[in-house]
Length: 455
Ligand SMILES: *Cc1c(COP(=O)(O)O)cnc(C)c1O
Image (tube, rainbow, N blue to C red; front, side, top):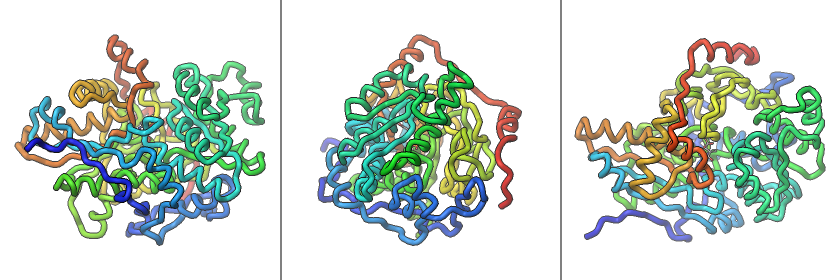
């Protein structure tokens, strides 16, 4: 009998609830703090910026399961379930006894997992009478996902894209505009914050910090406008658990349970999305599974960051988050995995690392592209540069299996495809890419400016 390669769920088998790991954690994460008063923030505080429902989800420590609204499920059906794939060809090339599976989140209209949260965020905004949504985007995956989701619910989307990224990745702004979003390079003259920055430095290239400031200003000064976020916060990861909940059923169809679960790590949403539904069995019934978050060697917050209260953005507008951080003004090297260039780990994952439930692993840029090339040439999919980090970490584990002769079951998340990142592949193929390591001194310098908070 020929071996089954791909496992799908039918529409009626799709999960109908998200998994909220916060409810099952023995040690809850420390609270988010108001940056001015240093007091814990409540739902009302968050709801000034975010939709009310997402604000509630952010601070929900009691309900393990949260219903996916009917209309969100209808939109998920445009592209879900996504396939769970057994990577036989990659296994063969590595000559490993390991069984390698991946969840393919690249098969949706926007090509990355980010749509899974953009859809519910826009849905809740619509329900609550919001007409406009805004956000920032760097390389543009989140902005593209949000623009698509806004169009599904008839919302107007305004996206501030880092000016220099807009020039480097022009196709992503075209995608956003195709779905009807208004895209502005940040810093811009359209906000007070942008004007101030341009007045000080007319040639400012823009950063996520400038773009966040502009998006938050627009949200707080425009009637019926809310801000949305593509990673880091708990409600975003909650929505992403659709990935792991599907994968759990699909692994059952394959008759296996993963020994190791691996995903790349920027702010933690695709990692938590795949890992948390499986981690629930570790928390509730002591199942032994290893959880590995693959981060860039040049931005090593999980392995070398410090656990402190810090801002989520460079400008210092967000709540203070208790997390592993490299400092909010850490300037990561300009690697091609733009989605992984983030200074902090988010509150949930930081608590899980402290409690020994998971670990980070650092991947040099060249190793991630070597892995992506092998994956493309065996499995036929060109991965996003971010996802290449997960593939590299998986290959490391598969090689360990070859050495020990153990047939471990490995599951990784293919968070997106790389078809709009071909400039990165071109640099790799031309031999122009390099690794960036970072010294302890650089890290302790960037940690100097984090706010002093006792906890
Ligand atoms: C944004 C992005 C990431 C990183 O974000 P997380 O929140 O850590 O998942 C990873 N892969 C792709 C393809 C992305 O677009």
